[in-house]
Image (tube, rainbow, N blue to C red):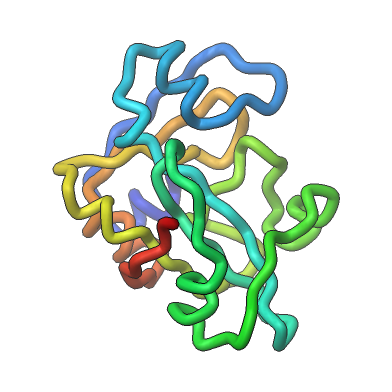
Length: 149
């Protein structure tokens, strides 16, 4: 949120009760939000050993071949859950592409452009950020890509 404020990017924050990992769709349904407007962050590692953040609808499955192509990698795989915190600084369920330990390349699924506002994790369990896809891309220096199966 500090990054969004420093860059003067418009956003809203929502806090809710959550003590453990819950997927994006379940959270959206619990809060009466559109699950397709709620985006999850999937951390991956490429064949080269480089890390990438892929942000996509909570209801969607990622196509690893499309993700690899977007990142310019021969292949890509999901980062094991036990490595998420060490790589990103965030715990599973609170991972966001905004403000990670390092500036990893970020790819936002092109379906985000269908919405005036998307919902992403706020960096900890029980926190959401509402912002435009453009503000998200500015905050993360991200690019859009076709990532879905």
